[in-house]
Structures are given as structure tokens and as C-alpha cells.
Amino acid sequence: MKRLSTGLPDLDLVLGGGLSPGSMIVVAGPPGAGKTILAQQICFANATPEHRAVYYTTLSEPHSKLVEHLSGFPFFDAAALGARIEYVHLGDMLRGADENDLRPLVDEVVRKALDDEPAVVVIDGTKMLRDFVTDHALRMAMYDLTSRITHSRTVLMLLGEYTAEEMLTGVEFTLADGIVHLSYQSREPVDRRGLRVVKMRGTGHLSGAHTVQISGEGFRVFPRVESFLTGDVPAEGGRVPSGVPGLDPLLDGGLPHADASLVLGPAGVGKTISCLNFLAEGLARGECCLYITFEDTEDQLVEMAAGFGWDFSAACRSQKLMISHVPVGDLDLDVLAAVIRHRLADCSTRRVVIDSLAEMAHTARETERFPAYLRSLVGVVRNAGAALWVTSETRTFGPVDDPLAGLMYLFHNVIQIRYIEHRAEIGRALNVLKMRNSRHDNALHECRITADGVTVGDRFTEVSGMLGWSALRTRPEPEPNGPAAR
Image: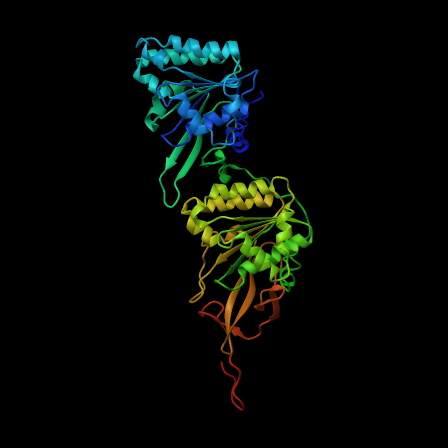
């Protein structure tokens, strides 16, 4: 069966392909959750001169006020009013209704559905019907309405401010083919809206709570990444060059295809510059790349890259490189996953950078969810055949800490950059902590930031403190004519 698109591709994905013609869908949620904007957006996306959209209001805001509120959204088209979108007020019909009879209302809606064959019919404020008739009369009217609408090609949407308890017992929900629950949560610094498909007959809809944003662009849905079942990573041999001079020999020739790599290190040690190395290598090979950043803006990263001779500005203009700056106050895990998923959709993006993971985990404030989220996000990137390069910050002073306790197993390769005390100077040391199913160098190597970015140098031969000291230390030189220091 061909489904009716909502006009929102990600919502269609959540719904399992869209809305079934002849079905009744209940959209429930508190005030401010986005019910009216969502329904209006669906109407404008589907209404045509041949198959219009009919929007019924009960005792809600006047049509003039409704149109005024919608006029600022890009989906709104004033020329469609009357020609493709019809607004009908049911207030007078309800005021004169007998408490045991909603047949005039049902007959009106069914007549429109059968005679005019609209694509969508919306009744905004159906919960108010309970104030005019008995429960028995409401049940009979709803049964009559849904059974008769089934024989049309119309999607009937009922909007109401139902509570969770009412959703368990209300006749609307028993008879509905689909139930979409919108939520609103007050949370600092940014409030959160959500969407959950409670029921959708005959579809493989995506489960879980999905993020919703209402902006000047309208109603948008960001599917929960844990709902995606990723398949096996495409088999492809060879190695992916890291772009960090001197690192690939430590990695047995480079990073295995579609691996997830983690770079650990304290602030200022060169993690972000290593990201630039990684992306510059990909751009030089003609690959499309994505950089997710929570601190540095696009302009700052472009300027930083220019200091090493990499023209990221041209790459951004040609859309070979996309830099997505997400201020930490606006961070939402589902929105972030959607940015990555859409960039990977055409399979041309081969390198993805997230800078940094510790900041992302802390700011998201979803501790219980984060392990499953990260596992799914890594799976989405790998399934697209892209290499993932992630940074995470460790403690600058004191013993080595594990900022991703219990999550390190998600990364195939783990590289650590640390500060080192060397003859009253602060230097850097790099080592490969882990490579899954691949040989790698176990030694500590000198690491510098040069005109080529982060570079890896010679192996240290006399260094202690890797696992116990607050900073790596080179062993002191032996005193002249004396025994070697221990």
C-alpha cells in the first residue's frame, strides 16, 4: 500500500514509511508540544486542488489567529487557503449538539471525506468533545467515524491534549490505527520536545523517544539513533592513512578500513590538530569529510588549518568538507546523530571527526543512555564505510585517568598523547594503546607539533612513569665517574 508522506522524511522514517490512507491517527500531547504545527505542516505538504486538506477546529483559537501564527513558517502558502486548504469551525455545531448525539459532526466529516476525497482531514481539539456528550455517545460516534473513514482514501488526524491515563482508556486510542505522543520537558539550558510512536498498525515504525525541534523552519523530527539496526560493515581491505606524519608505521601501515579510532590526551596536547591532520589527508585524496566540533567554530578551524598550509575554506565551499559547530548549550544527541547520518547518506563521506567525546558525554546529561547511543552511532558510521576519528580529554596533571570507563571497547584503535618532563622542559609522547585485530607498535614515541601538524618522531628508550607518575619522565643521565642512576 502506498503511504501518504508527512512531508518530513525523518518523520516518515519513524512512522515506518508514512501514513496509511483510510486510517485514523491520534496525535496526543500537552500544550506547546507541537500538535497543531505538525498537523498543519502535513496538510500543506499534501493538499492539492484535486485532494484538499480539511482542518476542523472545535473551540480552539479563531481561524484568523491560527493563520497569523502559521504565516511565518516556510511551509505556509497563503495562496493555498481555500483552494487547497479549507478551515471549518465546528463550534456552532457542538453548541447545539444533544448530549447523546454527535451524528451531525460525524456526518459532516464523513461527507467531506467521501464526497471531496481530501488527502488529510484534521480535527483539532477532539478531547473537548467529551465536554458535550456522554461517554457512550462519544464511543458510538468515534466508532461510526472510524469505520466510515476506513472506506475512503483520507487520513484522519485527531489532535488532543490527552494525559497518559486518558491514553490508556480513551475510546479514541482503542479505535485508532496510529497513536503519536508528543512530549514537552522543561530542562535547562534548553527545553526538550519529543515524539514517540505508541502504535502504528501494519508498519515497522521506529521505537523509542525521538527528539523534536520547532524553529522558524517548522516541525522537525530527529530519529533516535539506537532505533537503527546496522548491518555488517562492508568488507573492504586496505588501510586508511591517518595523515599524521610518523604515525602510520606504528599502526602497521595505517587504520583498518571503517574503524573507529580514539585519541586521548590532556588539553593543549594536540588532539584537535590531529583531527586536522586526519581530515587534510582525506581531502588530499578527494574524499568528503565531516567535522563535528563543540568548541571551535568553523572560522576558527579554517584559520587553524591555514596555519599548517591546509585550505579548508575551499573544501567547505566545494562541500567536500562540512564543519558542524554545535554549541554545548544546544547539544542534543539525536540532532547530532541526524547530522552525521544525513552526511553519510550518499556514501561519499569517508572520514568523520568528533571533537571531543568527553565534552559531548558530559553536556548531553544522558548518562544511562550514552553507552547504547555511542554504540549505535559508531555502528552507523562504520556501516557507511567511513572512518571515525574521535578525541577525548584526559587529566592534565595527576595519575592517568580513564575518561570513558566501560566504553573503550567501542573503539578499535586507541592512541594516547601525553605530556613528558624532559630536562626541565615539557614535551609530548605518543603511544598506541590498542588496535583490534591488528599488530601495532607498543613503544612510546616523541611527538611534536610542527609545520606539518602533529608529527611522531623517534622511540623513547629511557622513559618511566607511564602508569604511575603524574607526568612521563626521562631517566636522569648518570653522574660523571659515578654509578648510573636508577
